[in-house]
Length: 134
Image (cartoon, rainbow, N blue to C red):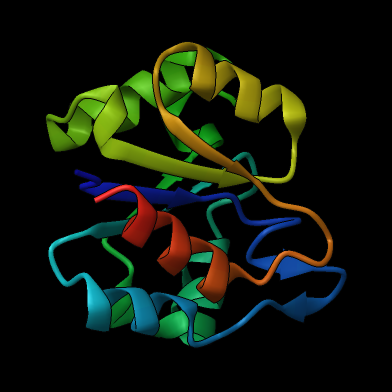
């Protein structure tokens, strides 16, 4: 069972200069309130307010920002840090990213992954994945 969903920022939550599906986190929390939603990014700390305002502060459980962690994707230690923070096994996490290198690294340590493409519909994709993998 998935306990944490980690979303990359650029290319997943933000594509080009636009927010992707601002109802995403709310929809997940309404359907799966027990799942933690986190943002996993190699970008700067200033994204907290941007994401909170765009997707709703109340729906984001944590931020994992490379600069603050002194770890960077695709280093497996980056993903291990998230697993350890929530005291979960790798198979209890779902990670979404548009980078094949990051996806491969997460998958290599047993994390469930979804490779996001430019036309990926996030709400539909995540909800369908969760339903299929109960």
